[in-house]
Image (tube, rainbow, N blue to C red):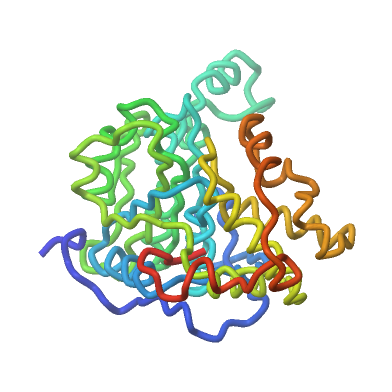
Length: 342
């Protein structure tokens, strides 16, 4: 059976595993990809809380060798999951932040024909040798991950916001995602491929999608899917803030209360986890009293649309039950379905 379609459960992501605060991980920007680990960088632990359904989706994708397609509101924690998994498994993380001009080939490699032509016009010995085509080929994130697998090492790959690219972008990746192999057209005979007998070396691929455009069915068929919902459990929100170094319980409670009440409004863009972390981080930095949170200080960190700000200013104040006006757990009881990850 081909490596690409072999189920392999030898690698599993355990979100409850105890991890060091820092670890050294292989550098990803070396060209060409070295045969052994020659350089490492120190990486800090990613404070990510993954619920059981999200962790299950990660492990299904890893076992099947399929990309994990993550959808959900912006700021729900889709992008950071790749960082958390890479850190937990001690693997290098390759990243591709998609733009409107990004081509599928950019993930595999780039060929600098202009520089080669320029070097050919210079006196011999003063620049690169245009006869060496490989000197003008540079692997992209997926290309390096495949080349690293050839050397016996696994990688994590993040393709972030795939819906920003042209509609042909996902379709142009179908063959490479199926075979985990590619040829360099400008250098005949050069081919990179994950070894067919080593499914444990397949890159662990995360693809995020903010649903700005519909993805092709053929691409969706090749993915494992998970929708990252905003946590409905305020206890989980509290854990997330605590994991991001917010030790003050009263501040966490007050900030969560404001966020929950804002998200109950008919907003154009509801604030998510990213906005919450930014807001609370600044509140701590300037030592804002908890009793002032209902005045919505620094609201621009939470709300990004003028009409939403105007609507928030009409939001009634809560009753007096806690520093923020109520017992936090009352509005969203623990255990509602759908809250998973952050």
